[in-house]
Amino acid sequence: MIMSQHPDKIKVLHIYRTYFPDTQGGGEEVIRQVCLNTRVFNVESRVFSLSPDPAALPLRREEAEVFQVKRHLEVASCGISFSALTTFREQAAWADVLHYHFPWPFGDVLHLSQARVTDKPTVISYHSDVVRQKTLYFFYKPLMRRFLKRVDRIVATSPNYAANSTLLQEYRDKVCVIPIGLNQGNYPPPAQELVASYRQRYGDDFMFFVGVFRYYKGLQFLLQAATSTRANIVIAGAGPEEQALKAWARDKKLHNVHFVGRVSDSEKTAFLAACRAMVFPSHLPSESFGISLLEAAMMAKPMISCEIGTGTTYVNSHGHTGLAVAPANADELAGAMNTLAADEALAKQFGDNARQRYEQLFTGEAMGRQYASLYQSLVYLKSPRA
Image 1 (cartoon, rainbow, N blue to C red):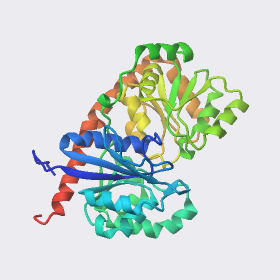
Image 2 (tube, one colour):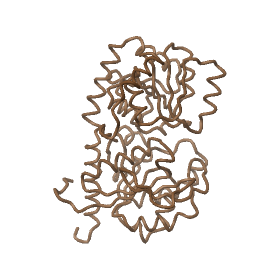
Image 3 (cartoon, rainbow, N blue to C red):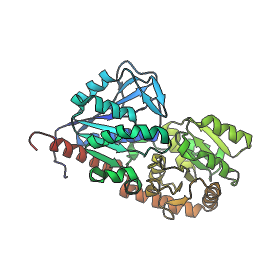
Image 4 (cartoon, rainbow, N blue to C red):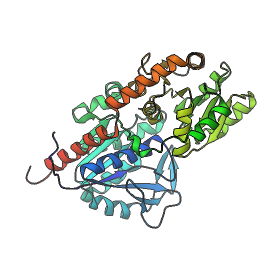
C-alpha cells in the first residue's frame, strides 16, 4: 500500500515482556527503533511491559511512554503478572493498533482474554521460533495457534526466517517481511579519546561482542575459540549465562578474554569504531536477526557470525560483509577471527561492503516507512468506510 501524504495520527501500543531501562537486549532495541522511525510518519507509540520494580507513573522516554506493571513470576523466560489486566485494558483501548513482539505467551493470554479491547488491527513482530522449551511448547501450542489465527499480520525480520521457520510457513498468507533498520542519528558518534583508549588497551585487532548472555548466543564456543587465537576478545553485556561463562574463562586462564559488563551507547559506538570485527557466535535459530550485527554494519565493521538459517546471514553475507561459519564450531570461529585479525585490508573491504548493505537494506527510515504503511493499511481495512 502507498501511504497517503497526510494520514491521521495512528496510535500504536507495543507489547513485550521487558523493556528499557530494565533490560538492554535486541528486542528492546527493535521496539525503540520502530517507535523512533515511525514517528516521522505520524505514528504515536507507547510501550506496555513487565518490570520487577515498576514505576508508579509512565516513563517518558525519547521514543515513547513506557507503562510498566509488576512481574510476579517468570517461567522459562516468560514473565507473568497478576496485576496487568487493568493497565493493559486502558492502554489497548487507547491504541489504534496493537503491536505484539513474539514470543511472549503471557502476551497471547492478555490479547485473547481481553477481546473487548483487542478487537482492532493487530501486528506481530516475529522475533524467533520457540526452540529450547520443547515440553512447555507442547502445552503452549494451542494457545499460540489461537493467538496467531486472530492477528492480522505477522512480520518476519528477514526473508531467510520467513522461508525457514516451519511455523511461519503455516501462516504464510499473513506473513510479510520488514527488515529491522537502524537510524545512525539515534546513536552518539564514537568519542575519539575512548577509541584510542580501547585500542591502546586491547590492540587494534581485537574482536568485539555485545549482547545479552543467553543460552543461544553461543558464547561458550567463543570462549573455546579464544584458546586458539592471540587476538583479544572484548565481551560486553550481562545475562543469565554470565557467571558460568566467567567461571569457565577463569578456569581456562583466558587472559585474552575481557568481560566489560553492560556498556552505554557511547561506549558501544567507541568499541565498534575501535575493534577489528564484530563476532556474533549465536548458534541456534532463537537468534532470528542480530541487532548487534546491524550496529556493526552501520559502523562499517566486518562481521563473524554462524549460518543458522535466520536473518544473521541476511545481515552478514558470507565473503562479502564478513565470514559465516558453522554453528557451535569453535575451530571455525577461531579461524575466522584469526583471518580478520591478520588481514586488515580484507577486514576493511568487508566493513565497507557492510556499510553499503546497511544503506541499501537496513536504514531506520526504510523500516519506519514500511511499518507506518502497514499500520495505516490495517487501520483503513478495519475502518467502517473500508
